[in-house]
Length: 592
Image 1: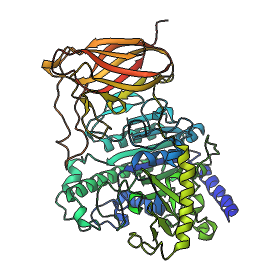
Image 2: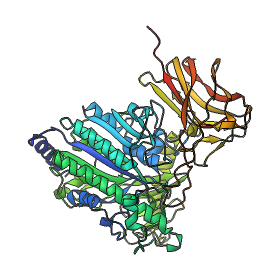
Image 3: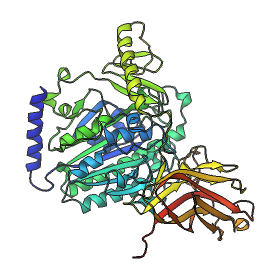
Image 4: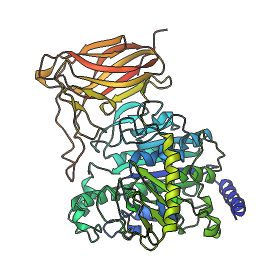
């Protein structure tokens, strides 16, 4: 059966490549939403939300009914990018370096770039900031977005464009879509791989009036299975953000049609974890952060009109680890990776004539987060406490049947324990990876407050490090440290992003790495207000933000090697030094 599939798939792909009009190989557009649950779509039965464009992807191609991702953001991204469980690639957290994939990993962008595709990522990266962890160093020719785990303001925010700091244009999802459409227009005559990684409906819950107005007073006909847990305004904001995503997906697919690329483009839609709030999710147990079904089940819609029949329904279990091998096979790209992948190509399941459950292995998928591991077979889920659930008969995980099915429980427990012993052994107990500086192919290195360690009285603006800043810096005994490795030595311009009131100007600060140091003063007052609350639909838990101003501290000559980069104050004439957001090191070209 698998041999027959290979022959038929090759024939279908060959026919698609021979069809009139460019390109000769299929393009790929991959949408990833952030914190949107499986239930946040009208096609899945949610009467509170309207998602006609995303629904059309499902109806126009293949819809996977049991597709799984990780419980949180950066692990899912790592699994999608590498085809491997996130712990194998070194990803164990969502901030302060734990979100980075090891440098010996091969990404899906590298696979497509090496096959002469133009590659681009727009939106949230969340797998490393400093090159060679930056998306431009992981296979993406073009990057426009942010590399942090979340962002503090969704209207005209500061963003990263190929390593340079720029100002966004309007609401972020609209802006990311505009940029992605422009990239596609510029590369319409060559095959392209475009990843549109929206950062919504992740908090802060900001959405333009156009989308909020419809849902602001909605009675919410469908509620979470434990309605007392639900925050209705949070639900309304999340669904309004989803409707904005749907509008942007529609803009993209409409433009593909206008350019004559619809039949030549594989379009994929999925999300990165369960919903970021207690809201209707098909009655499933758990939400974001949970390894139960509700925390890890995601939509997966895959449309390619030339090859995949409309309304193809796939009920076999699949996961984010499967996307790299699947898309490579569909695009006819032979590839090899530096590490063995965990995923399988799902292409056999996309041919209705070959959708034979007996020909597809009854595999096991693992979900792991913060010391908890669950395992999913086609029929059962075993949770981290040893409870067993028949997901066909009990999709809400309400009845533990481990006692009634001891053989199944023992078999899944042994499989789970073997995975834990083998996979977690690849994750070091201590992360010793420094933050790199001075990658020879990149001009800029950004060291945000998120990656720093504060000493003394300095505090973060929020307990969530992503997009936070340091404040309360009032003593010469205080300091901020980064564990760094200079990859290639040279001269670097050091720029601080700060705010400082009129009465606190004049602090003398030093930036030092080993015996190399630069000293400068915070000479100019810049004390803008905090922003973000004016756009928030519900009160946030993350830090508010403000307009941090760059000031050139001076130049620093650095040798290659490992050490601690320290920012400290030598003199503090006022009450405090500054609020600090970011240090940027820009490699300078020495005079010839």
